[in-house]
Length: 227
Image (cartoon, rainbow, N blue to C red):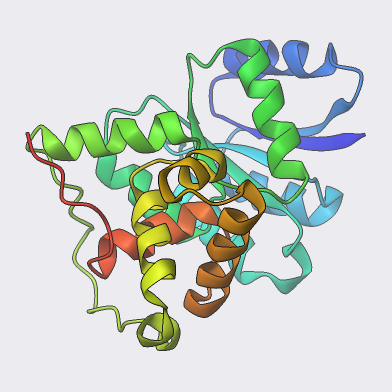
């Protein structure tokens, strides 16, 4: 069974998500939290496979909760997926930097939500291509994702060691392409594409594809969309 923790300050939404998730044979909801502080405490108590985390919650928000979860070595196997209304691109990128493995919009189709939980629980945490493309579309429309002021981030040590093909693959990941689409684009097998992605993630110390996209934007490997 995939064990899920729900973190949202709206009880009605939590109830709806619980009903949906528990109707699946392979998913169970182990706890619910109304704010980020409770989410962290319950994550430490129950060690869920996946936390569905709202960003805006009272007392302790979702970003703070994710940072606390990511910083706790005992919760290394806990994957966080943000549930967002997708009205603030800066918050999306902040969430990925804080340790989220991906995010979903709150009007996600039921089957897509279930599948996302299964994918993340397997450890294949990633940004879905459709969501990545939506972020890029916002950027192209003249709404760049500017992070909140913070110290300048140093380039990962492995950045200089990326091969030309690995740089190309990272750019394609940041453009929202899946492994299968990258394989078609580069005329290689999906396994070869996956290997290139994995090597790039290892060199850049990226937890998953979500963080790989963030690193690509931060260090000039992302495509430059045009309006």
